[in-house]
Image (cartoon, rainbow, N blue to C red):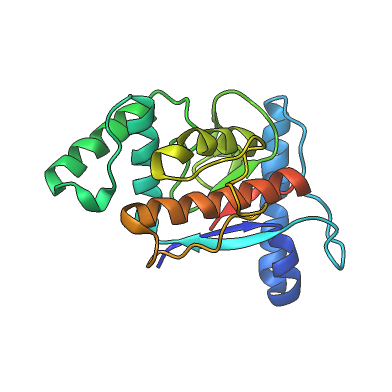
Length: 215
């Protein structure tokens, strides 16, 4: 089991799952209504065939997300950045405590988000949103900004050996990032794989106006 990440989810649902399409359309409507109450105007783009905009489908094991969050916290704290596989279990647990502490600052869009459900929307807003329970927004009401997530990913790229060019694109990779795999990427294999998946999802979200959906 792992985290699935989709951008343009309705396109896939329209082809393969009519019941799921109805569910996610209603979920997006609840999300848009809850965001409007926060002063944010956004809605999931309407379906077209073929899609007019970029879409993305990917994912990774849940543990990869935790490891990437650890990199963000170590980088922001100015501490030595090591791969999760290269430290003792005791040190890893201590680092995870730092992640929990930083999460409680409620400032990071990578940290303040459900592990297995919920949304990032392609709107720029400061802190992550915590929508009220009565809004019934998936992911416990935590909603992040795609643009802020992209900025956070860019800020930690060099910590795990990813070089960005002047346009913020991984050097020599093209827009979608290199074809990396978790079995061949060195000590930061998990962190880099998760980084590239989220990075590609962010690009598709910003270009197409779709939400990033964790599911």
